[in-house]
Length: 431
Image 1 (tube, rainbow, N blue to C red):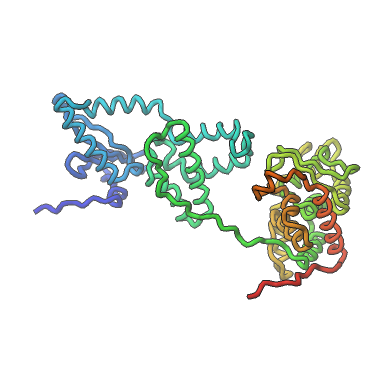
Image 2 (spheres, one colour):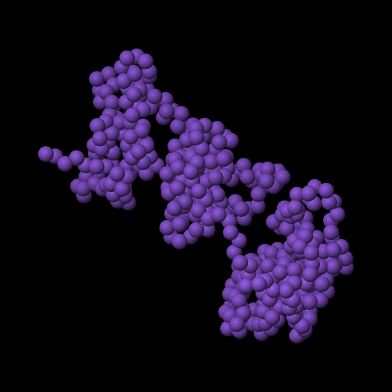
């Protein structure tokens, strides 16, 4: 008695060809075959097929490629084709071969996942509703492209958009999870969610949402804030002063601490943005994450830093912190590398390791320690108002209050740099 082979997705996945064969058609169950072909790199392409008789001739119809179409889906497709085949014999439907021909014609005009993704990026560059019609930042485009290239392109790039399945999407999300990168997995989910929504808008998907049942692998949970205490700030200023980094790099760090700007905003500061007479630094919307122009008050500490940095600027270079190449600013990577060396020294002295963006968190936390109201402190770091009613009804720009906050931080930083007293919280949470 012949033992019947029980086919599973795992068995389909592990199926290989004998060394002497380049292709083979394997019977999985009556009417359902798996066509296996050896590729040049010695990997295997697998396609589900359905055998049908058309005008007395045997024809092979594709049911989809594996793994985009799993075993269960292939069986479902087989039953649908068999039903249509029987109806065609009675003249009640078109023959599957004719339907397949029409489907191939339609597929030629239907974009692949990679083509739809490229189309989506171009659409984002034209404008986004989330940005009030403004184009999204190039940094956002780069992050989306990086995630797509790493975990989606090789698995789904060549697949027609209407053939996207839940299993395919899940396999892309699981790839970074298996290599221990839950953050990357969450970003892959985000890319797929945006891509599927875009496809639905363009009518590339007219059936059920293929992401139904697919969960975000990493619900957003803010990590503990890494911000230096006053004691750690005093140590940081001491370490910065003793380090061998360039004066321009050290001053860029100090500008972050005095103003709360992002690392890339600090190193990219242009001389034309700085009005030292009016004590205003105008950050243009092109360099602002909020996509709106932002004014920063140059406190005594910030003004000291700007004037000191001007001594190191190159002739005809428009930037406060010039890079090695003429006419260019320092790159954000310069700060990251310099802070790595500083972080090791901080750890030796019993302080937490810091990254360039942590200096922005330190400034925001320092404002809270100094008693600055949260809605003023948030505005000082160019965060948009989150409270709906205040955003709708309150037209005050709060700039005078922000100026006072920057000046308060300036006085505190100057005291710390010269060995002054630290702010010690009176109230502590109960254990």
